[in-house]
Image (cartoon, rainbow, N blue to C red; front, side, top):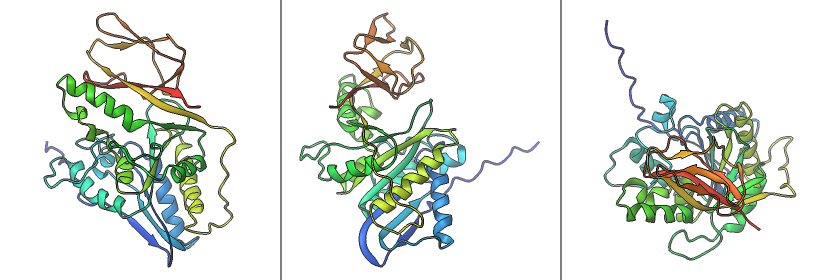
Amino acid sequence: MKKKPEPPVPSMLRAHHFAGLAPGPRLIVLGAVHGNEVCGTLAIERVLAELEAGQWQVQRGALSLVPIANPLAYANGTRNGERNLNRRLLPTDAPQAYEDHLANRLCPWLAAHDVLLDLHSFRGPGEPFVLRGPADNDGPLEPFAHAAAEGRLAEHLGPTRIVEGWMTVYAEGAARRRARGLRDDADVRYGIGTTEYMRSRGGYAVTLECGQHEDPAAPAVAYRAIRQTVALLGLAALPDFEPTPPARTFERLRLATVVDREHARDRFVRPWASFDALRAGDAVAERADGSLWRAPRDGRIVFPDASARPGHEWFYFAEPLG
């Protein structure tokens, strides 16, 4: 019996660019940066169908749509192709992994725009949320000058939970890993994804986590967010659509620390989901030596990963802002 041939590795990255004749902001929207997160792809394809049918037109600025940012991972139905595209997203003169070649195409596209909306989903149960960047600053880690515009966008996307502090806390974790002689995410550049690269090129960006991977409502969350962003930036007059104003109240959280898994026998004391509430002193995880990691303050657990490899990020602790 002949062995079934392996499907060819995708060698093309598809983007759709629509330019208005009047000046305005340039928006790029990404789907499937992780191949098993398809809500953004479905939403973008829906928007493309509307544009191609002439239901509305881009009048100002520009709109670029990338339905599948990682074709290999998407074809395989997996988070990554050969590595995580949303880590160490930087151009390179010596690409090795498949995602290195993607970065060499995506990075110039990001740099040519002013605003990025990156559409994702997550593995466990939970409500949609938004990840935004730092306050305005001229520091060495992530200098930034568009916090007000980025915050305004984050508040208009729909979810009422907004999380910040990724790059700072990741850099602190990377420093600890370097001190232990680890590689990969011991490099602070490993924390640079789509939004961090966009900010480094003078733009602003948000990540919208639209819900659980299989949640049938997640594509609608992504679709609404695209329309909200297009309307908010004034790129087009959408028929029968006005941007919804921000909610009156938001839950605002700051990632305060990242906890690494140090040993294969490290375990959670119970199954955790992102944003489960913690009270000061609550036991979260037990180390191989029997010691407990306890919440230092009231807050929430974020991105718990029971399958994390030793030496890699295991979970984040977030605390309320304001």
